[in-house]
Image (cartoon, rainbow, N blue to C red; front, side, top):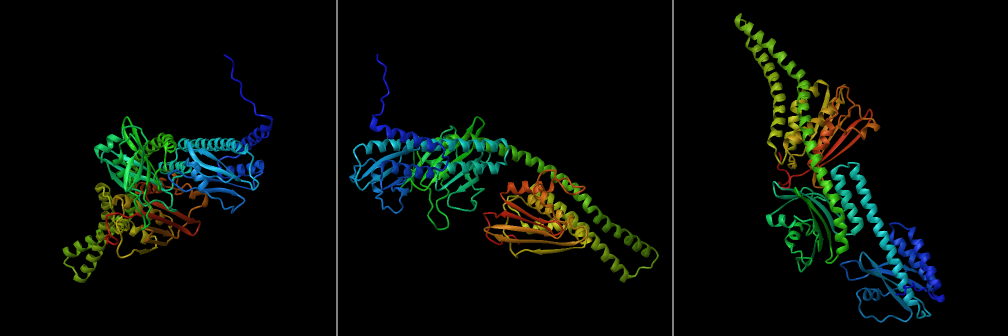
Length: 566
């Protein structure tokens, strides 16, 4: 059998092969910026063919009308229906002075390149443009693959750096956005098999500049859906006539219905019309679900499903890290609460001792007056008033400590900010007054409940108020205000104390880092853990010698109307 020899280009085609080599080599130097690559390719192609104008247009998956990606020169008035018909393999009458070729991307016909020449093209131009389009397709596919590798490597590095779970969640979602170009949203939900729910822990919404307000949403799981998600399969769905249809052979539309919680927002129709759902299942059970959505039916295909499949192991690692972090932080939080009780005992012992110390002499004097028949009712009334004040001080202090303990044990799912502040001040008020610190409270008459346990909220405010008090040993002003900010509650604690050095700001929330001579370094670290657990935020501003301002932004409990926590 004779060997098959590779055919060599005819001499008149040598210029084309040289051009293709030059184009291929030039495009190798362009990374990530596919639009730049297309513009560069079009410019070189125009020069090679001697064309007067050209364009590249694409039909994004799930859409019917082409989008003009680049044209040279601008405002050339191209009829994009030519490229639409070409991509959809329809018969089309192409003008004699125009040649067309399709560009493939993401394993499908993606768009086309068109050239125009007033004098017309010779017959060899059309097959030559097909070769050029193939070279462009291969280069764009290479860029897409390199982008996948880079995004995956970046997230792998973040995993190795032991990034906090919440930050890692959003790194994964951001990576999916850059690769799949979805125009609706992506989300990560964690499974709680004890309660048979999925909790939304991270969501990136394409059209929103701010963070999703649905974080913390819980979706019920039934046995049928749990059975569907036992295999590591990426499910695909498209919406037709307000009904979800699964991809052929999957039969899982009930899963799409459960995850379709973004039907509209702010009166603007932003419904999902295409969805990819990747259950993260292990031998130990369901970890969670990775979800990607688009606004047009047919927006996703096998290419996007394979991309999501590549990210499933990363999402599983992120959820497992989250479980470990939550367990460690829960143990740390419990240890800090015990430490806080010991600190409270030391902190209030002086106030309790002063209060009881003034009671004992008065009682002894009253007893002596009774025994010596020298009792003066007016003096007795004054003494009893002082005794009552001292006992009220002790009662207030111990009542605040008991309130903190009760809040921890009750495990409530909604908390009262005013009550938490009252408990905090019951414990700290005497020490604050003894240090000649002026106290200013500005709370609205009605406050919403917070989505947190009462004990966690009281621990949070107590730690922050204690730090503010300790920063003003020579006196000053402590102000606490509360106000609604964009659907959440902001509590601001401001002191006029010593402030925090700029080099310490980035470290003050680290465990065991402290600027106090007798501090444990756990107070702000525990505050951060509490805020993380309840999906809140904490912002710290400070200047040396001028004081510190801490803003805590807390999620409002969904089941109450404004102004129920009085």
